[in-house]
Image (cartoon, rainbow, N blue to C red; front, side, top):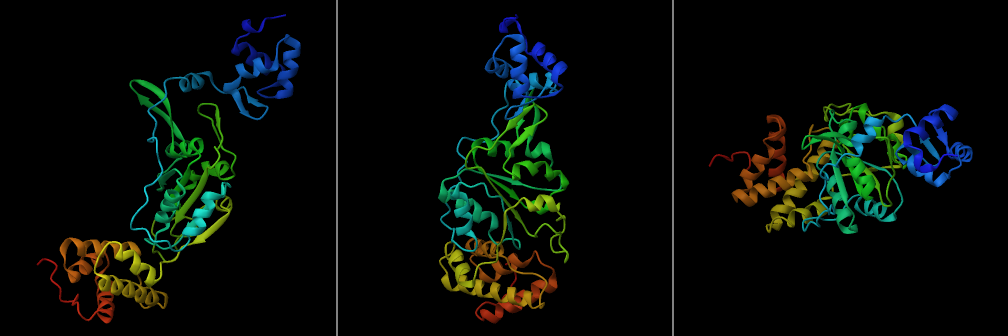
Length: 357
């Protein structure tokens, strides 16, 4: 009978592979222990780096990867406290209450939030986390985003190759809220998140380690489309997402622009000129109605109104602030928008404004 201290990890692994193959179960290990006169807890502890699930071990994990993982860890990717700060300018609207309830529920409930650009999707998630005092990790998705960006990979630190957690693994281990921003820009490389969206955690094949979600882990994704691409060409660069991937989101929240009343309150948080704030909100509301009727090809977002108000705070000139805020649009759209503004505010001549003065 061999004493357990004389049994190396490599001997145990090789012996188990010879008897049961690369994939072994708890029953296999118990049988092996009976043959070799040792105990299940001791052997399972020695094989912890090969464990891939409950009573499941994968004995094919390469030794060199185990050694890399045991090297000194990289500096943590995130600071200690990731709870967002509460914003004094935030006004509740849209899906905020539902988002906050999902976060506070403690239930793993992946949620997809769709809506036109600049209507507060990301800000609502951020402020819901702030009010619920929950950590938030935000990942800005692009066509180039891959598994290494999301899950993690090996990095060179002080001359040593070490494993460095990606934002998804950080969120899993911290029990944080994970926000996948602009997810409809992603390629099929995003499919590496399939098991995570099922609440099953993830197997880090590069280091032979299973990471399971800590209580409180939650996933939100924001997009300008519903993951079906942009038929009208408004959101160039958006992609058609895999149907099975989309099915893993429990619900889809559709975020609309706030009403003129709510939008006025938002702008009043930034500017003391309450009449100007109201006229801007009314103007944006008219543009959006005209857009839905096919009269114009663009809309004014809540974000764009905030930019205009901030320009007014800087330059103290309403017409100049509006003109500068509209310069991102083509000439025809800008002209149409300025005409619509003069319909709600006859006191400001935006058409004849000289922005260089």
